[in-house]
Image (cartoon, rainbow, N blue to C red; front, top):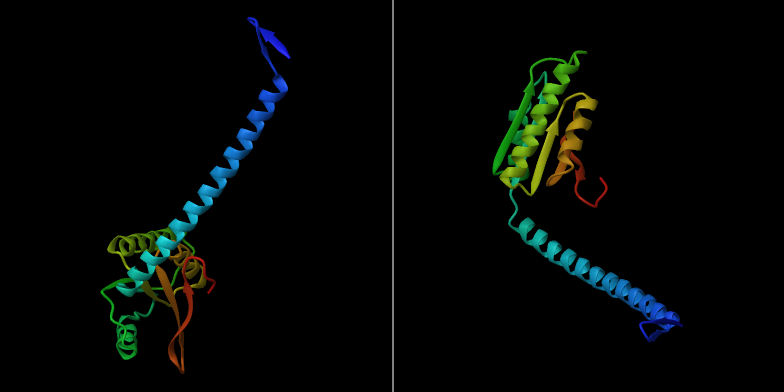
Length: 171
């Protein structure tokens, strides 16, 4: 008990009430936050499904040495894939050891990835024949965007869909 200005306060009772209030406040905030998060996730899934139903597909062809444009176009037509826009980047020769050459190439890929996001594509069909390192860097840039289908060229089977970069799903 503390006496202040003639009034008596029971410190234990007030402290206990404050502690219970704080615990209840934290619990209520946690439950409300989880409920709001769950509601937002459901809403985003519905919007995503609606967006994919009305999806916009594009093609990105990143090549070096041998242009792939004509072959990729024939493949997509044969598969019945209609793309709204085509993005292409071609490096005319082999990659050397000059880091600036690689940086410039990846900067162009980054610009194309930004253009694709700005366009509002929901799916990217990605074809490449660049060296592995350049392909990994391009994939990293595309991973933060719309769903990206990755294609491999087999000498006998032609192009084959081998994986998908999409939020929350493994290849």
